[in-house]
Length: 259
Image (tube, rainbow, N blue to C red):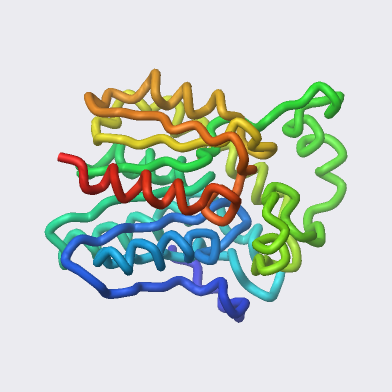
């Protein structure tokens, strides 16, 4: 049964649809994020006559603490619904996913024929550092079980100070929601071989959230005949808002227009 929990959405975190041209781009945001993360890419694509749509995951982007009332299957269902609506009204629909949105885009591409697919900073593996002592997953499944919601801070995975200050975020994130997302990436990793769409993969080597090796894993395991990786060196995880965003936007447009 479909959940019908209602909660006020934070201004700037809303889902959006911007009508511009006959080719549509479905933009998929990240875990504990909102369509704000893909809003500047949307503006760029609109200028170049692409229609853009960005759904909001259930439980995300709200003022209240309802994030953990939903799981990754609910997020995927919302994205799938929007994708199918776009395919009815537009002759071409491209899919662009950021972080966990990249994983959802890959899951979508494993089920449906997608003409062009872009996976940005995709959540396939978490970034591990030696000074973490333990893997982040271990912390989530041990001490993290004693509390759920944590207050957010200006995103440490966005290096541009201007963009970090302007970033619109929820007030609290749910650790249960993050734990749930590991079910998504387990599912996606097992089904990458079903992905045949032409794919552009973008990742920063400075990403402190998702491991760049995940993008290499995607490249090696999808069945796409046309696939490309673009590596960044100045940005952090939120590359669609960070120092190299204009370069990323140009690379995406170039890929979308390539025969």
